[in-house]
Structure formats: structure tokens, C-alpha cells
Length: 301
Image 1 (cartoon, rainbow, N blue to C red):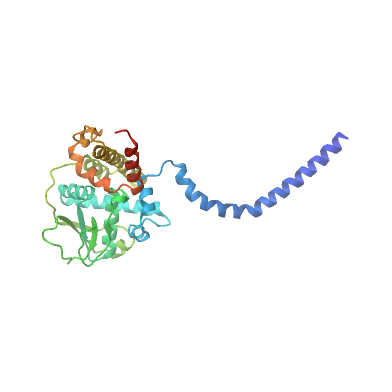
Image 2: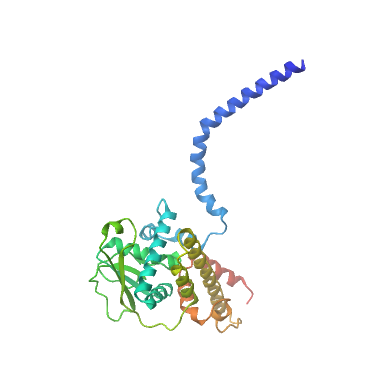
């Protein structure tokens, strides 16, 4: 009796397993279809608190996202190509004149205007998007290519004969190539980059300039390593900008706060970093700034 009961039980169990397996296979595709959309949102949540770049992108207009090429289906590969171009551009500038690379980095990270002149819109776009990786997304005011000069963009592309006012404090780069096919593939290899006009001298030398120069000229730092180090460097300085923003607003709202210079209070910062941190505060998300102000108003004065 026991053997018969056991056999009967096993038969029913196998039948049940076959049914469940069949149901599983038939519903598997639907499960993954539904799960894919959920994962798009869950993956970011599982990584932790949203970064400033994530918050800023939520506040951006779709046209601005497209201009910065931030909505590509394979965004990681796009970023790696941009960073490869950034290293190429850095080497070209450094080989031409060591001071030119420092000049370009400083102009970008302190919010100065940089104009890229080129007979080819694609070349201008590739150089501008490469340089954009030096900044948080919120600091980017970009127009890839315009026939007319405009002051409101910190990264602007245009033709060789763009009419730029003589009193504009702008850095002008010119990029050209004889290998159009290479450029069409997205690479700045075989390009020529020259500084055509320099801005007024800026005596401050921010520490971020040294860090970026080191990463861009190090032949062993490339691809995913460069991506990780550039991103972590940006986030590190965004954190400093957030702290300076908090202290500056607190100083304005609470008169009893006695701090003469917030730049000297933040660890790892000095007066040399003022231009970077002042500019990077502008790129913080609106929701973050509103949250800081609301929190300060709740503090006892």
C-alpha cells in the first residue's frame, strides 16, 4: 500500500510540475516584457540616492537632452567615444602648446564661454560633447552649431567666419580635418585643433584643473577607467559645490552665522577654487536648492 500510494503521489507531482513548467514557458515572454519597464526605474533606485545629474535631467527640456546627446539607446558607448575624443583633444592641445590645454580646461570648468569654429558641424559637435564631460549636466548651456554668435551658451559651435564681438571674453578653438570619413565615424583622430583667441587672464588656478589634466594626459587611464574617474571627480566637486551652496544660503538667512569665507571652510577648497564652485552651484537642480532653502528656514535662528 505504501509503495502504491507513493507512486500515485509522485505521478500527481510530476503532472503538476509539467503543468507549471508549461505555464511558465508560455508566460515567460510577457513577464520579461513587463519587467523591462520596471527595471529601467528600479536599477537607478537600487544604486542609491539620485545624483545631481539625474535630478537635473528630470528638469530639462527634451530638446536640451537631445542637443547634449543624452538620450541615446547605447549611452555608455556614446560616453566612451566622447571621452576618447576628449583625450585626443587634450593631447593635441598639449602637444601644440602645454599652456593651451590648461587654458581650455580652466575656461570650461569656471563657466567661461568657449566657441568651437569648424567648417563641419559634425566636428564641432564631437569636440563640444567631448568637452561637456568636464562639467555636471546642470552647468551645460550648449548650442552645437549656430551661424550667429550668442552669449548665453558656455559651449557654442559655429562656422569659421562667425562674427564674435571684440569685447567678448571668449576662448575660440578651431577644429579641422582632411579625413572626413574618420570624422563621420565619431572620432577626432587625424583632426587639427588650434586656439584662435584667448580670454582675459585668470590668476586663479583651481585644483580641479590639475586633476583633469592628470587624467587626460595619463596614457594608462582610458575607456571605462577614464569614465569612472572623470565621473567620480565631477561628483566629488559637485559635493563641494553643494556644501558651499548650503553654507552661503545659511549665512544669508541666519545673520548669527559667523563665517567670513565659506571657500576656506570646506575641506579641500581654497580661494583658488572660488570660480569653479561658484559656477557649479548654478548647475545644482532646482529641487535640491528648494530643499536647502526650506530646511534652513526651519532651523532656529
